[in-house]
Amino acid sequence: QAQFVESGGGLVQPGGSLRLSCAASGFTLDYYTISWFRQAPGKEREGVSCISRLGESAITADSVKGRFTISRDSAKNTVYLQMNSLKPDDTAVYYCAATRWRACTFAHSLIDYWGKGTLVTVSS
Image (cartoon, rainbow, N blue to C red; front, side):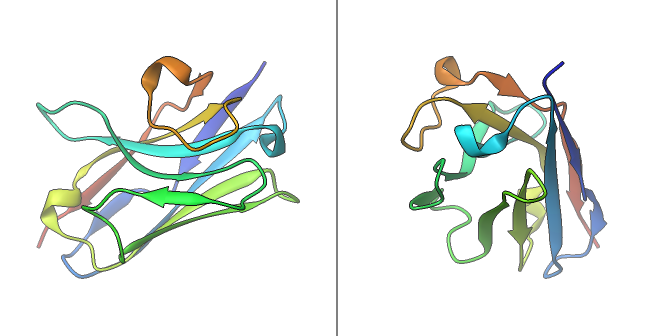
């Protein structure tokens, strides 16, 4: 059964860093474009960063540009989101998602698999 397992969330102080991991089982991530989304309390789920199937292109939301970096490790069948200079506004549940769409997209209708999410709390 295809599924994601996200990890790396937790409580961090403003200005701190976390690295989220998204490990896939039951399917090979190389065949998918992978995105990270987040959903804060009372808000809609929004796209944060995306990396294409071959890693040749990536997009990042303006709100996290320069602070978050997405990467993938084919050997480990895992995608990462390195988050630096965290702010309280980054507090949310973070989800990884996979689409067979070749180009990066944050369109929910094109997502084939969703992870269950990992909570990131930025607070002093």
